[in-house]
Length: 319
Figure 1: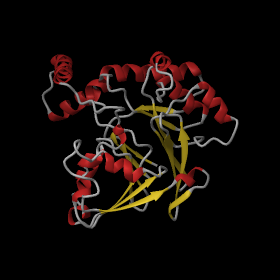
Figure 2: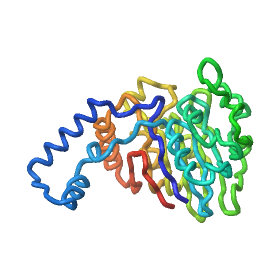
Figure 3: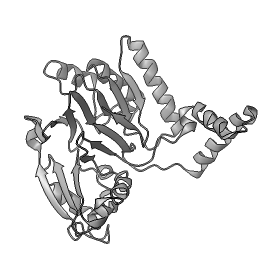
Figure 4: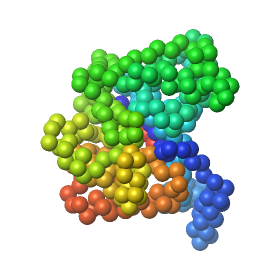
């Protein structure tokens, strides 16, 4: 499996501001003054040596992740604003001729997880087939509602692509075989109006996507007393939106602190934890600061073998 991150912000798109961009440039140039850079190779070496918060921007698009199975088939998880760029990529192939077939899965229907769909170009091409997978019986209604007057000039049902809907609520109890060797399971999460984690299993590898969830110590303890959906994942992409202090101030808002995300990964023997659903109010500097605190927390716990990664748009993971 190949997993790619297209949108990693939570709640609201948060592009880099002019002030933030200018600040990054000034700091980079100040670091470069004493380097006496003369060749392209030295430029590349210098840029690669920069701290993460200067090397790139973590990203401002809302949630979207793709999973490409070993057969090459593509699955899209959530349609935040990151899905716009997925659509642009697909329009370079069969979708441009109306010969594409696209599989889209939804964790839930809050705006930041569906708001990119009206700007997903393949839906406007006649002949393209869109397969929507969801544990919600009203998925079709939710997608149509956001594209109604006076909120949007075109209607969802009026777009010429072919749309199929598959209810997968039973995948909580019994896995679905998406392909001969690709298994899908889902798990209900704590979040206002609900949300589901998705688990993909193929060729002995496990990938779990668990955005928009509020894990607490009590919930983790309760889960450990029965078969745990999350145990032994090779890759877990998990909501880590808040600091611990902020999480205490926002109980029942439906999001997890980076501290608790590390606790989850340690308890569940996860190989790689990717912290995502970044708070839109957090700058790249603050995200990096929180990431370093998460690493420190893991070290203080002791015996944590999990690799901890801060989500960056464009990241690719091969399982």
